Length: 249
Image (cartoon, rainbow, N blue to C red; front, side, top):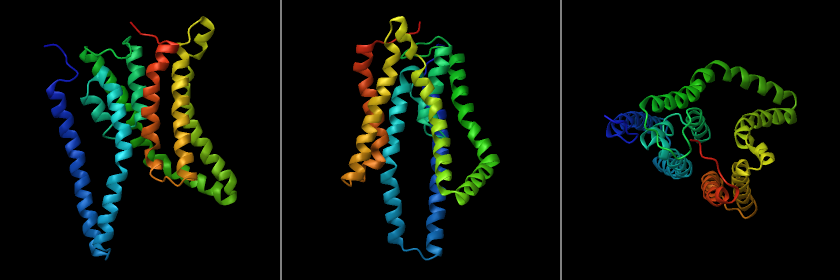
């Protein structure tokens, strides 16, 4: 039997896992509502909190949907749906999947037809993100304690250190964006495509931030990420046609 990235059995397996996670969410929601009633929190406050939380999950859900669409061409719908629904990160999963596919010689947009490669991509995406489950309980308390000590001694340096850690994380993804820029000296401008896409996304993010702060458009704060992602992906189409793109064979 030929392997199919959208085989029904994959949707059954993924659906069962996601339903389990949803069941856990419902379980803790019910427990939280009961506890709120025990400590005297008004039911109107509880309902307002649930409603506002549900509304604000729409923004990150759009970003996740963008990631699923981006990966679905090569990996089908089931695997991206799973990886971006359960302890997933759009910034990590897409890079991990693309790196694994590139290493295997599969070009962007090419559908995976080999089951062993599909499983390899699954392991690359899963093991990398699962490291956080191990490291967080082991080292987070020590790191947070050290940062708190720095902040207590010098608040300014505490903020600088915190920003430096965040920028260090971002720099890992910037390397992925700029890795092919040097191809310009070889006569190819394809390496500039991801840089320009990043700049378009950054401009959209900046515009959302300015509108949110200056004109008090508060809802843009929650939708800035999906808007910048969608805008960047839309810009990638004409930019790829103008600057060129490389297809791995």
